Image (cartoon, rainbow, N blue to C red; front, side):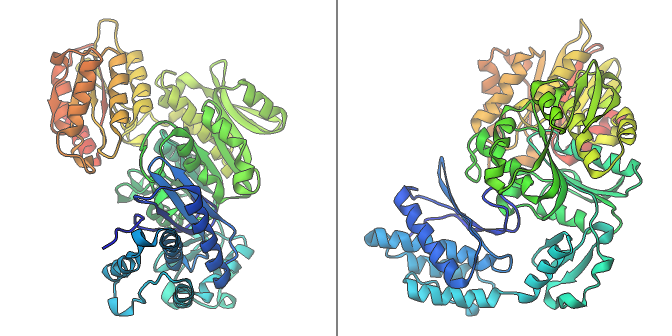
Length: 595
């Protein structure tokens, strides 16, 4: 049977890498994405969309290192048929170009449809010939169409209300101002009490590092302002200090849970790269979007091979901002600065920008303030928030617990970005300053991130540092804390779904700080396709190449075992920088340190 020329198609339920609207995307597999093929795919997509009455303009072919991503926009109630349109347009183009090679595609498509169907008896087998394919796709579109859903979404937009949708439930409004409707029994738009629905202040946060810290800072600011604040992150979904559910919820499911939390008067949503690429952004409206930074991570997945592509993914959050929404960007990140110039072309309009940096008087920030724009940065040791003609001193950076005496530069950046986002939500600067003066003093403020302990003269940092830049920031703080005669010890491990070069980059960063000990660990909860022991072998070999002695590189088969090894090695005056990644391991480490 002929192999299918694409990986599994994905429905995009919201703003995404390719366009702002919902749609579908597939990845070419084993096919050269040459221009003639892509144009043949595109023209077939356009013919089908015209026949179905779809008026979305976006059809995107994005070549990458392993092929190309083919994406098309579609109505939100036609996403399943959109995947079929995409697959047919590609397969028909291939059969027309090389019938001898691809003549068996129709049988392969039919077999795949039967295999994946919940009810094989309801399957209308795919066909390649265009007239028959158009008739089939029209029938599928009629099956899937939901006029009642479309009318409700149009009415919500007319009332300036956000909406959240999944396979079974439609939510109109948000938080305390929202209401859920079962898709199986949607009401008529005229029967909805629109006056009872409203929006709540909402922020979306993304970036390579600092997302969860920034989310927790924003939630703390909302709570201090009197808003019960729901938020999601890599640790779970929370309402204030209450855990609603645990796990990695920095994706569409977490966003929906936050927006549907009826006790919430403020919503903060962490949106990671994977969720944007797999399904798009679950919510369709936010008042502010924050991009913390962009650094190498997760290359090779979903066609993202470099920092430019990763920056484009992160900047997808601008697609959920309304005309009055604010996009907060890091002016110290050169790719975000460069990409900001093209946002108007990508989104059809230029979003309102705010910039943060470590230096409040950096050229970009000064120029932005001169035009009336909002900025935040450090001047003479003080964190300064500028909103139009007004400036607010948020306090001495060195006195803010998150900065560890001013040594954690990345947390200074997180504070600056969060200050702009909190102000955009409506939190007064005085409340932001009060939160920043205390946040991070308690371990419970920011679990898993820059948690500080001292045991028998040994200073211990427990952090989530999961890529080269995150590790560099952690080790810089550790060096700041280390006594003159003290030594530095750390742990090194990585998730399996990273390229070897990203794994080796961790070893290069660690070796550059000349630690006395690097415990090479297995991230047993994050093997993600790698064989046990594979990641530790890569790290161990890279550390030896960097000049580390074998005697300083013990290997442990679990995160907790690695922490125990480091604690047994340490003596008074030493500093241990302990990146711990799984929630279970972190809980065990905290229990160990409490003994």
